[in-house]
Length: 123
Image (cartoon, rainbow, N blue to C red):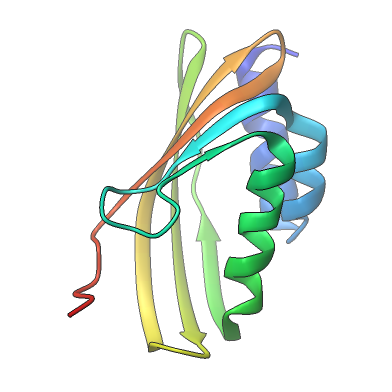
């Protein structure tokens, strides 16, 4: 798949709520995921570990009020994707979240994902 095809497939799967399917289908086995500095588990290496991290995040959600996946912007073998959510967490209460997700694609698979958002005051 081209970078544009990977980006469009990711958007479609996320809009359908098929996040785990997206990881399994589109991520390389040796992919890395980079959260914002200061966040727990800021760097995750390997598809299996990325999926485990997703499960931990998902298990902390009490209620998903809304979510929006924007249109991807593709440049070479990279693409950016805006996402926003309104979520009530089991710990931390309700939060509106906006982020820009950046992806690198090699050989038709996502090899790196990085997430850029405002880090909530953890203190």
